[in-house]
Length: 406
Ligand SMILES: Cc1cc2nc3c(=O)[nH]c(=O)nc-3n(C[C@H](O)[C@H](O)[C@H](O)COP(=O)(O)OP(=O)(O)OC[C@H]3O[C@@H](n4cnc5c(N)ncnc54)[C@H](O)[C@@H]3O)c2cc1C
Image 1 (cartoon, helix red, strand yellow):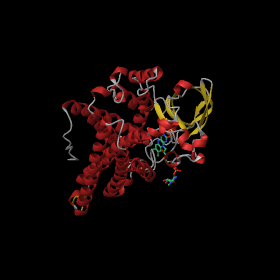
Image 2: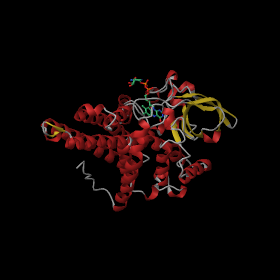
Image 3: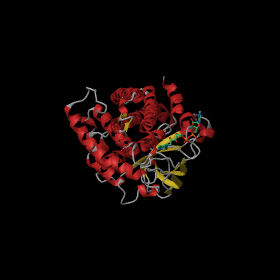
Image 4: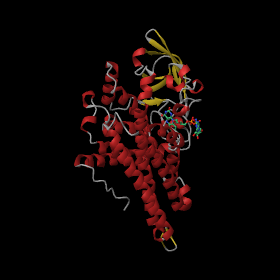
């Protein structure tokens, strides 16, 4: 037996929905993630015949892409039990964290578009809900080659401000600069949530936010990034050279508004990360537990050795603490979208990602030499988990930032 789910806040519909999600995530995502992870060239992850597209298609066919968009635009948010959204995310993270991030980020520009009243934004969200083939793919373009942590801690220092700038000329913004190769879905995205500098003298506090299609003239891409963990997650740079962006796409031209709502963004991103990596932590535990039952040393399954029992119990406790904490935080924040608790969200992101990394490392120890072998999934889980302590903000930096919301 692996970990029993003792959460009683779950209704019948959610239970049957979760069964379907489990089937898709373990039947399609898990094997696809393993196959994509083994490709030595990250360009092959996104080629036409890649299994990546089966994952995108399956996700859309199950309508999992529109969970945060209201019914009037074609989504399913109104009827969805918030606990269902949480449990689905956790299950996807359990199957493959990198693919889950790719799928999650692919929804971001469209989820945000649904929140703005402008007709073109509402239409964009509608088109996304209707897309069952996976041709509309979103990304979040914030990090730049010279500005990573600066986005969190740069404040009003002009030196720390965005290098990607937008200058208003008539009905268009002229955009120049580069978003870094860390942008998730960077080389495959059709749309982006784009952070730009509007008032360079105000540093990071002078930024605006656009939701744009990425097929506009003057926009090009880098090549897919080669990295250690979450290899199925495509990443790459987006380059702007005198790109002309219609004014109507600058959904937040007022930096003060962006600053005032920054907490909601932080809570949303960190909340999602905490659930995904609580799921991955459980995957690491489950793999280790199963292995201890079948690996014989000293004439008995290694489960019978006291040191292994103690280690398993310690891992179990950490995993359950991460899952309970992430679920509680996410439930509160989903029910309070206008005033979420940023501190709880950041604490949960840091705790889940650190737990996933620690538990995956402990699992490797339990596997002994086989923990390092490609034959078993644990070395991949470890690499995927390790990346998460840097992803969407280095944990230490997020923790410092969160104190502004105490
Ligand atoms: C898997 C993954 C997915 C990602 N997805 C996206 C994405 O979708 N979109 C996107 O735009 N970006 C994405 N990123 C980028 C990510 O957000 C950045 O890597 C992260 O914000 C850190 O920036 P950096 O890598 O430039 O590190 P740096 O900012 O260069 O930091 C390096 C080190 O210096 C420390 N440091 C830097 N400045 C300070 C300071 N002022 N005070 C104290 N310590 C400091 C940091 O703690 C860190 O240890 C992703 C990253 C990963 C790993």
